[in-house]
Length: 251
Image (cartoon, rainbow, N blue to C red):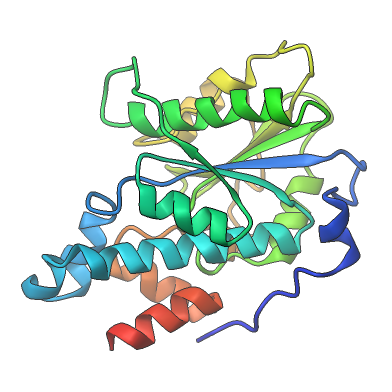
């Protein structure tokens, strides 16, 4: 099922602010190299010949990224930066009107170090480039069913101070982390992301407030796509136009 396209020309989006609290929100997304991204999805979705074609996988990754960006813009978040080591991702970001930021080498170690280092790099860039941004949200870039209404509600429910987060469908991962961004650099929001395996527990342990811990709301935002079953769930909820087009193209 495909959603109708988001009209990003509304006044809220042009203003770049959220209706709740009036604070300007900036968003940071991170996208891996297209040759490395979504190997689990490719392995469960296509036959081996298609899986070996990085163009197939990369086109779907870019489509999900663009749908996530459209949902953010429809929610009034127009300050969006994507961090990636991939020149094709950065070029797509520029074409969509999103800021593309080359990923820096990560000094951290571990399987999720690159993702969190990319988020932190984006946060520092936002602080320097858009110093009047009052809030910052880290968002997974593979949310093809995300709607602007859900994003607006989630961002509006964040406490005035501190961090809030939203888990994925099974409650173990994190799809969104949101918090206040003090202009003086206090609060260390750029060091806050703990995405990856077991990230929900890690964010709880760090003191972030979990939104809707019973997972009764915002199914569209919780559906990040790593496997074919994730994609099927997103399709049931309604895919964004870019992802729907990509899947039609692949048959």
